[in-house]
Length: 121
Image (cartoon, rainbow, N blue to C red; front, side, top):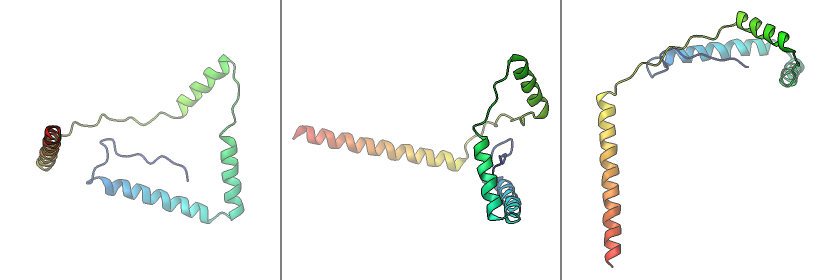
């Protein structure tokens, strides 16, 4: 089960998560159907061959290397990723940030009072 599941170009949020969830669900369903049609030995052989192939390589001269690079470029172009939009925080996020800042300041003030008190005695 190896595949990249792309998120939407504008990123994933709680509102768009159902789309990603459906992609993940479809991927798992497809992979499980493929695996259930294979015997245990076939699955083990497939995984063995896959991991054995990870370390194989060929030494190419300069012209072979350039031809391989050109072929790879022609075969596949990576998906274009759009820049994520600048998101302005909601009122709730602003409120929570302000509350967290207040609590941190109160905590720091308590620590300094504690240290000042201990320094006196």
